[in-house]
Length: 154
Image (tube, rainbow, N blue to C red; front, side, top):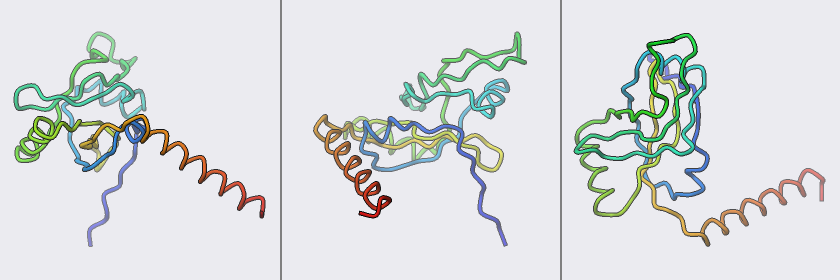
């Protein structure tokens, strides 16, 4: 009997679900240095301004900030360096086609540890318009009001 893979979420990009309609999600590995792994496991990472971009036929995570690891000293990493994402070739080809032809965006959604390895969840997203965002805020406020009313016993 095999046990389900335990995952521990390190950081989520909450802005991604607000700015984009997420259509399809993928799991990608990352090429990291030792000091980056230590820093990420300590939670010193931010996906707030991060995005995914193709360079040739390879996919990279850009603008993700991984804080320098204090105990690495001279062997530390550049906090904003591009990090290569590891996906199967057919997945890369499919994503590349979707980005080029359909005008979709690749958005980093969540960074987590799975079976001892650091993984990145990326999603194909379509940018939301301002009116979509306003509608989402209205729906969220209405849900909150309903919850408050239920708690008060109205």
